[in-house]
Length: 41
Image (cartoon, rainbow, N blue to C red):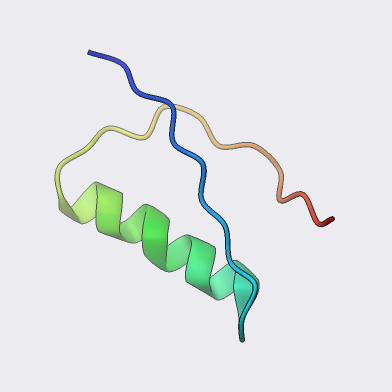
């Protein structure tokens, strides 16, 4: 099964928070296939 996941952060170390989210998915044995750039709006 494939799933598309979008992460966001608007407090503190935003890039660091995104990396923590990605690390959490990897720690849960989820396969991260591809990452996009970080978009700021």
